[in-house]
Amino acid sequence: MAWDFETEEEFKSELEWMKTFVKEEVEPLEVLHLGYEDVLKVIKPLQEEVKSRGLYAAHLPKELGGGGFGQIRLALMHEILGRCGYAPVVFGNNAPDSGNAELIAVGIEESHNESHREKWLNPLLDSRLRSGFSMTEPGAGADPKLISTTAYRDGDEWVINGHKWFTTNGSIADFLIVMAVTNKDVHPYLGCSMIIVPSNAKGVNIVRDVATMAEPFESFGHFGNHAEIVYEDVRVPLDNLVGLEGNGFVLAQKRLGPGRIHHAMRWIGQSERAFEMMCERAVSRHLHGSTLAEKQMIQSFIADSMAEMAAARLMTLNAAWKMDKVGPSKARVEIAMIKYFGAKVLYNVVDRAIQVHGALGYSCDMPLEFMYRTARAARIYDGPDEVHKVTVARQVLKEYEPKEVPSEYIPDRKLKAQEKFAEFLSTIADNS
Ligand SMILES: Cc1cc2nc3c(=O)[nH]c(=O)nc-3n(C[C@H](O)[C@H](O)[C@H](O)COP(=O)(O)OP(=O)(O)OC[C@H]3O[C@@H](n4cnc5c(N)ncnc54)[C@H](O)[C@@H]3O)c2cc1C
View (cartoon, rainbow, N blue to C red):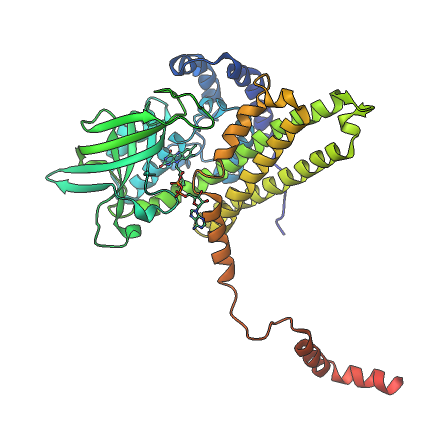
């Protein structure tokens, strides 16, 4: 019987190396507030070190140009990468580039268009190119069936028109993968396609980077910003289609499954870092006659956080395991569950850590306030909580049929049990 919670020794030592490397080499960058170009320069030697250990861009299967790690190992890696915002970039595993590389790789498998490998996939895996994923529109987010961006064929080109926003890294990307309606006469799930658009193509108008809770001061062209983009009569070659025409949603599902597992494990990494801060403060701060650690309400924070993180971690690793075994569509419920459960755990743990630090936690002298602001988005991006809950509930409810009388209705059960055990019941009646 195979039921094992252990990590194999060889990979465990890689994880240990990663933990030390992220803590000592990557986390110090957080407090320098470098510009995007300087970050790229300073992380270059770090990326080389990761490459030399074979841990760079580990998210793709070997045959598609990646490390072939499988979701469990990737999940364990992402738990460490989640501790620090720069770590995924250093490991060539950051959103949206990692998901886009997966999309292009799966697209090549579908379309056999090998030119995409040299032109887009390999440069993306090597960080020679940066990408954005342009799906959400001001009028179409949680319900992507409402997408109104269109692409039509004109000779040997696609002509694209539409209005997108929240395209992460859109303003620094070399190319954008745009979801557009290519056939409006069929259901959107069959009529949308993904098309690669170089960001310097005529008609790509990056209107602005949208200021957010995480980055409240409007800025343009920073890593991690979210761009609003108008595509106006943008022309790209027909060859830029990702996968097959009409397969946009199928590709999106394939991309989002692993991405959600990686997100959820990174949230656990963030939660663990907040938790460590909370515990350190609890044993350090002395007030009202004892340390915070000795106060029951604070112990409750710690115990609840520990249990929630353990639950989220096991659920996520289970989703990763299922995905490796049976693929993303059969692991749909598990993936949807970790999306809303993990996001809430992150939010709860960071919130408690702030509370334990009091004003210090609220201040910018600690990383917790930034962690809190970024954590809030986890409940929205890649589909809001409610949509994932609908997925889970729908799948679960499929297993049930309406019953006029509940199956557990005791009077009926009693009659059935009396019939089933009639012989035995008569013996006890005789003996009494
Ligand atoms: C930080 C961040 C990064 C992002 N990056 C990208 C990116 O790179 N590319 C991209 O294309 N998009 C990106 N997005 C957009 C993201 O995918 C959308 O925000 C998300 O899909 C929700 O869409 P919406 O914001 O339009 O919300 P809406 O569709 O307006 O939904 C609003 C609210 O309605 C409720 N709701 C929706 N459906 C249901 C339902 N069925 N039942 C009950 N309630 C429901 C939920 O509470 C939801 O939050 C990003 C968003 C954020 C915050």
